[in-house]
Length: 231
Ligand code: SF4
Image 1 (cartoon, protein in one colour):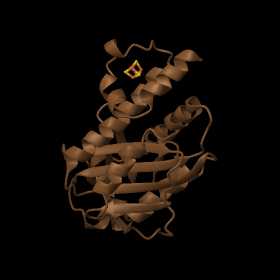
Image 2: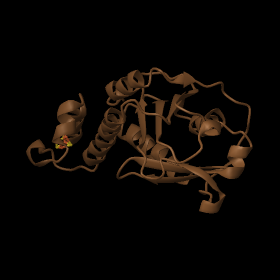
Image 3: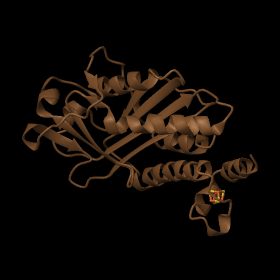
Image 4: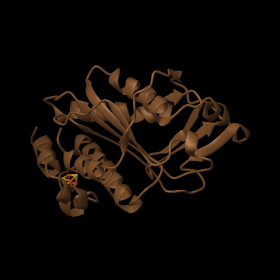
């Protein structure tokens, strides 16, 4: 699966000034049930108060990642109020001969953000507008937890899947160019929508399809649809 490679490279070049965080030894509890953090217990919300906010996940079978966490902007212990927030997850998956298998894995990896809960963090995610807001508890901020701890907890969960070979997570709390990153995240989301369309056995008719723009831009989508029609 190479459909997302150019988009991943573009995002990484925009985030090239991110610092690589030391992977921490702090172990945070992770569960499959999103915890509830009331407003009175919240220190601040990442992406809250309508601040710029974007979240995206993309996979590749031939790009390898550093199993690291990166940060652009202030760390959790430096943030004092609701802040802009970006989260980008890049994952190298096994090279499945059938693209439908890769697509099923993408859905599985994407679903993690809706049900995975890290102690002291409450995620509110929307696939529609690519926002992922995170309430951070006063208790966890007071304990000195950082993005290194939080990111490491998430990274370990992704690496538990047998078909995941490597991954990287980028957090952003200070955007140089939010609009550009948001538009690249939108293209990733549209590429995944096109895959959904293709594997739903929808007719191959680009003239009436609302995904034409992304299929014209991302190399390989049209060929994949054509190949699937012929099966
Ligand atoms: S290849 Fe054409 S029909 Fe298929 S998803 Fe893209 S635009 Fe739509």
